[in-house]
Length: 139
Ligand SMILES: [Zn+2]
Image (cartoon, rainbow, N blue to C red; front, side):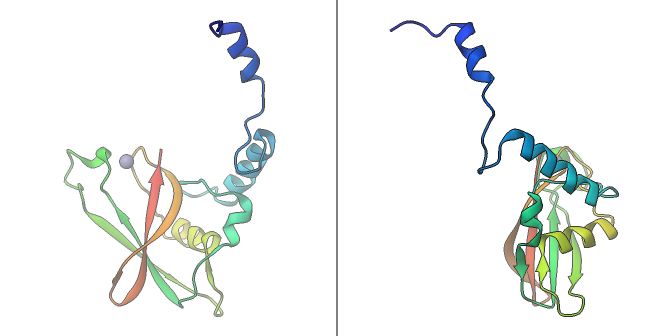
């Protein structure tokens, strides 16, 4: 079998990358629209526009907990400390990803580290008997 030369790799690089059924141009447009919605946020939303309507919880209020457990805090006094944000439903609306992110923006949530991409909200143990989700951040 012939070795794959650099020339062939270059040809392959010209293909659009398909990710979750989006092509790269659509992805970029989607990403810009989402960024426009959260201009004052100290974090970057890594969800697609359509995902912002995903319901995270039916509860009237939840906690979002931010755990400073990444390497960025290893040698600081904030290592493994956490911060809790209380998110309350308005007019009995379900708590969607978009609504939670807006609340976090208003409450000035700022990871203050290299991990500023909000990638998911993961269910963890209740705090004060209120359903609690950990904000998962990527870089
Ligand atoms: Zn970090």
